[in-house]
Image (cartoon, rainbow, N blue to C red; front, top):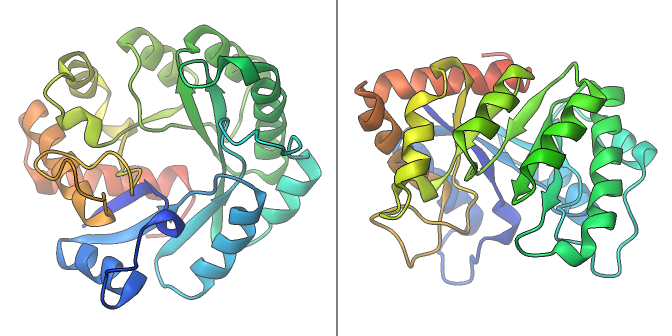
Amino acid sequence: MLVDSHCHLDHLDLGHRDGGLNAVLAAARARGVTQFLTVAVDIPSSRALIELTAAHDNVYSSVGAHPLQKVAQAVPLVEELVALADNPKVVAIGESGLDNFYSSDTIDWQRESFINHLKASQQAKKPIIVHTRDAREETIALLREHSLSEAGVLHCFTESWEMAQSALELGFYISFSGIVTFANAKELRDVASKVPLDRILVETDSPWLAPVPHRGKQNEPQYVREVAQCIADLRGISLDALAEATTDNFHRLFNIPR
């Protein structure tokens, strides 16, 4: 049994998919992927995803604003995030964080937004989903400063082993996407082989970043199996063992009963 711990079901192109989202979820379940966390990128999608999760079993959501979503948007308020999180199918705050790779010119907005998300995580008592790219030191510094009792996850991890260690020391989990299967991801595979088994999550970040051998296609939750298989092979364990560990980790981090 696998979990896609980070996907964007509302961004899938379903125009040519008979059966729409139901067919996407059915295809995933046929490959052993039984639970899904669909992640918000702004306040409107936070509200929409709450409605989506109400219509589907074993689909959960987060509330928050992605660091690259500044375009004419106000910084999300702590109170707004906490109020949206007051729903049993909302299991996390985010994704939020810092991205100097794509959008260093908005870093002040990102920082203020990230701090509000960290405060909302504390108040709502729900873990935070962190997007981080080319902002290693400041990301870790802000996580340390806010001493999160609920911890969280660095999702779609592409940074160094040193950053992973710092996050692990703070109680965070590390999630790997299809990038770990890419030919040029040798250093990332080294990180994936070192993270303790009880702190790993697997994800698709679909509809983006389809793993090998599906590159060039729209990514879907069913392809988290390829991510899991890659990491299992790196660690010299069975896919079943990796699936069991990552599913246990998902339930523990997001406080979802088995």
